[in-house]
Length: 361
Image (cartoon, rainbow, N blue to C red):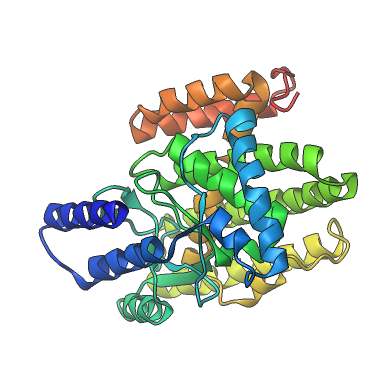
């Protein structure tokens, strides 16, 4: 009851700060309260004879994962992920990303605690789809997708969700490391930095976790998937650069639309070549490329990958503790200064003379 009261008080504060009781905020409050209301201690779920055996096994590993996150990754030691919530849907939230027709930069939505972010989340799929349809009517490119995890950035004790556990131990561990990294460092109004920071911590944590708790073949498969994810991110970054140059050309709208379509056809060909050659036919990203592609689908990827190379380079150069200190330091800079520092880290990472200290060593 104390947790629910805390949630209600925080939500009321959020509504007061916005000056309105908009339907969007009420659905967000309702979604959060649902998670708190359904939350059960993991040990109680494990002890329940009716709990599925595979779920018991996964949840029993969560305590080990949490302790690993604290001891090995220096992430917050709190009550997050000590509870479990069973949901009757495949995703906990559906996120909407939108861009203008001739821009690759996402529209921002601002909230009392999270600041301005590059997406808008809904606990109900139908409501998300209606919002995306309205944006499309207004001329925006839109992208929508479900998320299996949901974070309150440490404001509440986030539970393990049924939507998280279907992917197995490695998937759960990666999600925990990612979400706890947000609790370690989150920068309001900079989704690209915050998500890239969490991605880099997730990668390091997953590598170390698999090295200690999985077979060598599992680690090699993960490394191969991570390499494909990096190369996919490079495709997206190159496409955004291509489109930025096009949109800045000053061409009339009709020409921009035509060239925009050709640019996405080029991206499809580049993916087909990468898949057939470097990836030897691996189909990890076929579903992504099968959807209608636009500026917003690019932004939905770039939000999580833009600064990963820069932050990974810094982590590999200075090690984990100093990396956290350096990331916290640039988090205090304004956006332009932070971006300049991140570009310098990326350039240093590409330099042959860059440091050779490994963050995992």
